[in-house]
Image 1 (cartoon, rainbow, N blue to C red):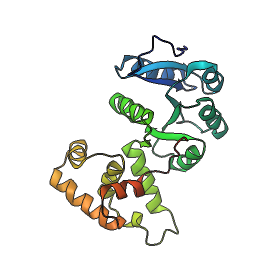
Image 2 (cartoon, rainbow, N blue to C red):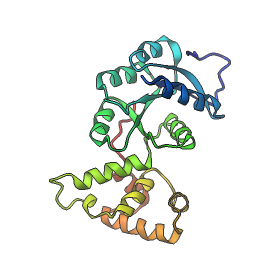
Image 3 (cartoon, helix red, strand yellow):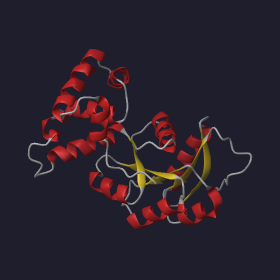
Image 4 (spheres, helix red, strand yellow):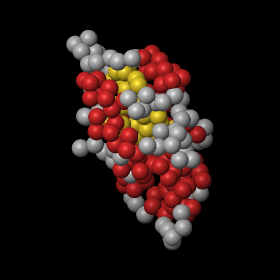
Length: 223
């Protein structure tokens, strides 16, 4: 299933290549991408075949790699290298916290939860193509939770965040407005404002931008 870039490609669509060893997942996600008006399927292959396919002139803007099983970091680096100017998003489970930093070191630019909806899938792929460092809210929350539980952190801000604050902090890091957070969590905007104020105090920062920079998962950007 290869779709090389050509004059027929829509410049307004994000070209996505899917890499997964699970055929049902690979073909299912490929269909979702092909059906989305903002995305274009550049191709799909098993994880081991993907580096060769990517070097064969596919030229995707984003490569979506299934990393929900045991992560092969050597292969992840090969895919990242073979993607050229394309950026890599890894599909992960929130409980894979130990793998996240390793994936970042391997060149991954974004983390997509396996619980993501088709809408969230398309949104993260589009944002990654624009050069943003992306992360599903539940994955960001898992990172914050793991950081709070990690021994030896002393009085770091992570230990002082409540579960709801950690959830809202993750959405702030993802760039959502108070209104969008309220809609996502089905709570009042005033409640979100109170939690955001508390998060800013615990982070010892003065703006949402500073908070986002401090909270954002350390997922590497491509140069």
